[in-house]
Length: 152
Image (cartoon, rainbow, N blue to C red; front, side):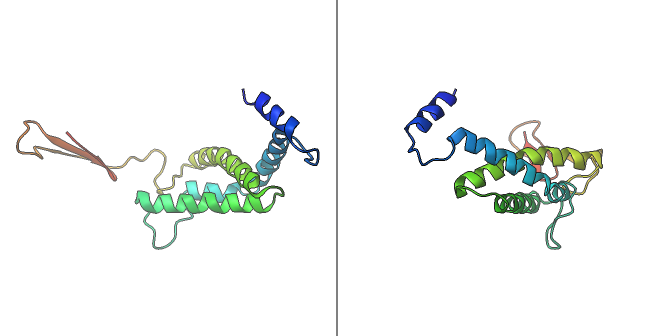
């Protein structure tokens, strides 16, 4: 749907532009994808729970979120450093490639029976429940698993 718009913009662009925008994006995406493959082990380490710092708790969502941000940003920076072109376009291409690669890395870590919180893939968190948590409504209860809690 956007191709006619991109073609119209390319037609209006000065003749000094070497490639139309969609060709440049395709070129950067292909190069970013190749570069990202060289860094897949960093993402697998995150999804396997191996890149947490000593002061980070694997059971904490906040600490795992920080580790995830660190892993993805490090790989995006590494991929972007291998590409040449407009800085914004390079960063965008690197981010797209790493996002796609992240899904593959997660699947590879799962095949190795590993997760970012260091539990096995067949291991569940303990489910806790309490009845009568509120005095006014009859039948109130609370359920929690890990850091997730539901009161009813």
